[in-house]
Structures are given as C-alpha cells and as structure tokens.
Image 1 (cartoon, rainbow, N blue to C red):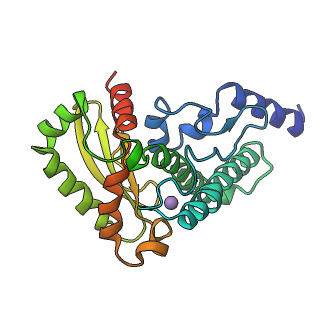
Image 2: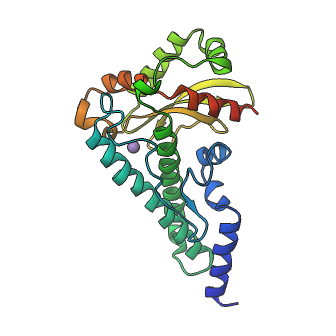
Image 3: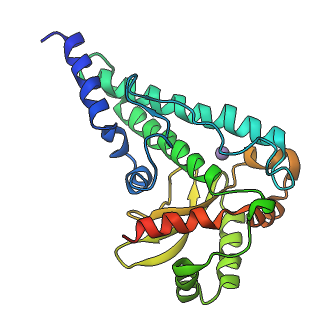
Length: 249
Ligand code: MN3
C-alpha cells in the first residue's frame, strides 16, 4: 500500500471514530468527551479537523464583566489559535505515524496536541459556562450540585472563597477549575497551569475561569482578583449543574 492510500484510510477511520485519536491523548479531553458534543467542539467529520464554534452569545453580552474587545480577541484570535494548534499537531503526528515525518519531534507534537486540545476544550467550556446577569448569570446553583458543594466545602461561601483564591493565585498563566472526581464522588478545586498541567487525572471539569492575562488585561490590567470576583456574577450555574448531572451518571 502506498503512503498516500494508507494516510487517506487513516484519516477516514479517524473521522469514523470521531477523532478519538486526539481525545485519548489529553486527560482533560478524555474526561470531557462525554460532556461535550462533536458540534460543540466544532468537530468536522469531512475534513477531520476542528472548526471554531461561534460564541453562544453576542461579543458584548457580558460587557459589565468582560469587555467586547477582550471577548473578540479572546474568542476570534486565541481560541482559534488553539484549534489551529490541535489540527496542526494531529497532522504532524499522522505524518510521523506513516513514516513521512520527523520522529525526533514526536515529544514536541504530543505536547502540542495536549496543550492545544486543552485550550480548545477549556475555552469551549468557559464560553458556555457564562451568561449575562440579566439572563440569570451568577447567584448560586440549586439541586444536587448545591448539596454536594455544601458537603465537600462546608458551605457555598467557603467554596467561593477557595475557588477565587485558587484562581487568583495560579502561578503564571492558567485556570481555576471546579471538578468532579467520579471515583470518590467528590468535588475538588484545582489550579491548572497553562491549559492542562496540574489537572486532576480522571476528574471531570465543571466550572473554569481563565486567568491568562489575555482574558482580563484590557479591563483589569494587573487586578486579577477583581476580574475573578466579577466572573462570579456571570456563572451559568444551570449549565454547570447540567455538566455535573452528566458526570455523576
Ligand atoms: Mn484564554
């Protein structure tokens, strides 16, 4: 079989599997796969590539908390960049697999895949994890999630305290995440560095706040704590609860 035919077959079978090749390489993505649909992740079966999905609201919808210019640059440039990175890494790994790439770069492209897939999944969860205050953003969750927050953090207030502190004190670029660990059936908070480092293995990400400077610098400059405080007012708790209910099944 020629390399061309083999590669075409590989792309076709990857498409048929829904890009599980990509998903298996990132611990965040693998646990998230059940929570996001292919459409939400912009997976295009025909081209076997990810395509940037639109924001679920207008660019200025959260302007009291996140200004329109930040939202445009963040979504159209940064998120798009992670998607380009995922597609590029998948292509390079495909080349290496079929003998047409540089094997000495395997570690580089595996790292790139993990980083950019982390970025793609994180941002997809970030956008839909927020909604305008006027539409019911902020406040507190209800139902089972509310009960578990009280069990695992003593109170909603204690949870908020740890979440804000953890996010504000991320060293360098990263995320604060509320995650659900399905083995012990507990909620945990983690600081993620960059897009994936320090994620708790096997945990399902529920609520994340992006604390890379690109997420807040135009409006808040160095005041990351003020940005995290304001973020609490636009959390889409209905969506976070939906993710939690899906994760505990
Ligand atoms: Mn970002």
